[in-house]
Picture 1 (cartoon, rainbow, N blue to C red):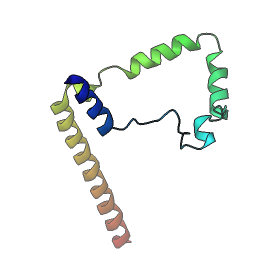
Picture 2: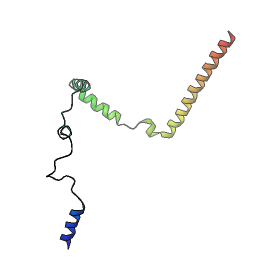
Picture 3: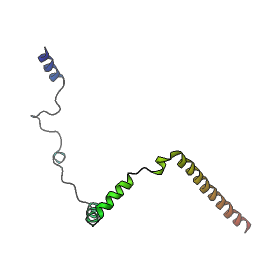
Picture 4: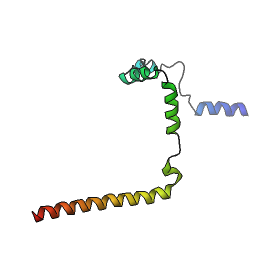
Length: 106
C-alpha cells in the first residue's frame, strides 16, 4: 500500500532538474567569471596592510555595534529633538524678520 502511494507521489510531483536534460541556464550563469578587483578593493587591502589597521578596524566595529543614545533614551531624545528644532525654526524666523526690517527701514 505504501509503495503505491510513493509511486503516485513521484508521478504527481516532477523533479526540478532531470539529469538527462541539459540545464536551461546560459553558460555565463553556470560558470561566471571571477569577480573583478575594483579600485576600492585595492585601497582597502592596502589600508588593511598598514600596522595597527586590524585593531583599529575591530575598535570601529565595536563602536558601530554600541547602543546609541536615542536607543537608550528614546523619549528624552524626542523631547530634545523637538526643542532643538523649535529653537532652529525660531532663529530662522527671527533672522528673516531682522533682515526684512533692516531692508524696509533703509
